[in-house]
Image (cartoon, rainbow over all chains, first blue to last red; front, side):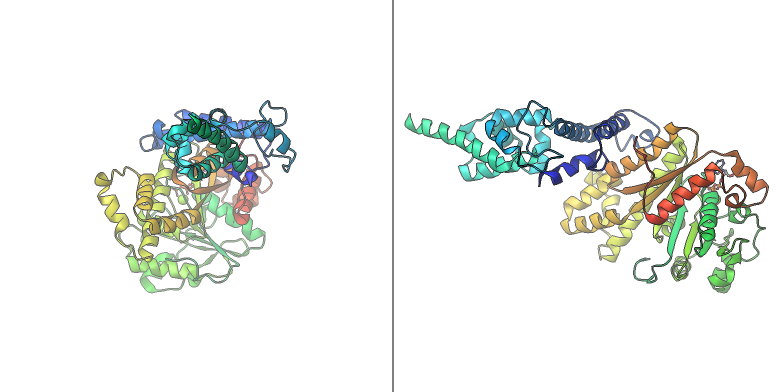
Length: 185
Length: 313
Ligand SMILES: Nc1ncnc2c1ncn2[C@@H]1O[C@H](COP(=O)(O)OP(=O)(O)OP(=O)(O)O)[C@@H](O)[C@H]1O
Ligand SMILES: [Mg+2]
């Protein structure tokens, strides 16, 4: 399932899913140059395809690159929350994943590492920006009811290429701890 | 103008060679692809539809044909009777002339009749040389093809003209298909009131149509996914030039959502004009040259629907 999610990053970089690390890098550099600078292929349509529009594309390119690079460094990379690697068929990662519980700040950090903006998440997942931010900053008091929250977390985690079930479970666990503490008071 | 259904025989294809700017090498490339395919054993009909500038015969070293498409329009002579021998086995030429598809001298019904007859040319590869410009007749002919081929030079005016040509083609295609689904005026209406809808270009028009009418969105997505351009880069002088092909492919996809097959390039080669002066088909006279190999490569890629290798780095 996760592999399919990566496909969109390869599509953004216009390479096939079996591309090597160096192909990923050169595709990224080529596209970045193409959409950031004026050139013979851009200037004829610069008025209808201005830098502002191209910036959106550049962001997707950055995001795809970040995601794919961190993926290929998987294994030696310090993080252990990345789920299935490109080469392994998964399974071996389970243990590692258990050792790093997901939380709001962890989700936020992963999102930033992958170069994805809050608005991008909102656009793609249809979750409101404020809600994503509240989830990340663990503003438990303004979060929706647990059933809904759980749904949102798994959608969001899935979007970040993470294990949606584990992310939701970890997060809800923390949420419940907060709730019972409140109720005690 | 629906192309599927009419041509039941899948053995042949219609290729249209256009691209907007004059002088990019469309006619030379049409004649060379035809020659290559004919010598490979395919049955080829070349149709020269270039308004006013019909000159395909010169690239094959034959003299200006006496019979031309105006016989079809004016006297009802069938296309098969207008097909002339080219000196290359398996390959025939139907020549155009100033009267054949000139902007205003041809009526809409005549145009449709020509298209119907082209679509009936079965079991062969029909290569249509469109000439330059973005006239509606040119674009409509481009759109009947199974494979729409654009020839480009790595130079800013050619690029600009090609964007124009492709956007116009797409706009017409979308209009035609929405009309066939019964949404006759929607596209025109939106475009005409584009100020109100804050539409500045084709991309925004497509977005706006999709957002306003979800059922139209599906049709548009379907049409966009079928609209595929085969891109040939001609008169290439450096490896920097070749990157332009990949760049345009990327822009078409990311900006308009169009799939482009960058099928290959042809270097600038003085032997090409020399072969015209010698009045011999280039692929016969210089068949072993590097440029001839480049022509073979992109022709094969078009045939097989594949792309240039290593185009991305
Ligand atoms: N790769 C090439 N290297 C050198 N010369 C070339 C090359 N391709 C085409 N030419 C030359 O460029 C000129 C224009 O070519 P051609 O007539 O095929 O262009 P065209 O696109 O059909 O033009 P038009 O739009 O006027 O019909 C010709 O003189 C031809 O010999
Ligand atoms: Mg020509």
